[in-house]
Image: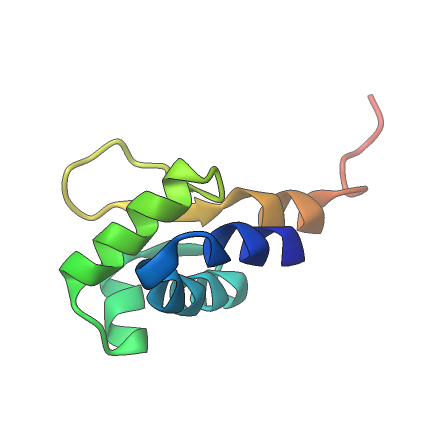
Length: 89
């Protein structure tokens, strides 16, 4: 996940809040905008901007396809957790 932090550091002014959002999704790899905003005490628009940047970097993925009540997944983290847990075919 250190590679992800290095990518986030390149975001400039938004890197500080993006790091906080990244830390949140490391602890809760499937989450919502509202949960992040409340948990970090930041506005929902700020959370949305950070998630947009993290999505653009390929770190998170929006899973619902909805305009409201979106869920985001931290794909790399979940892939690492699932590694080696698949049953043989």
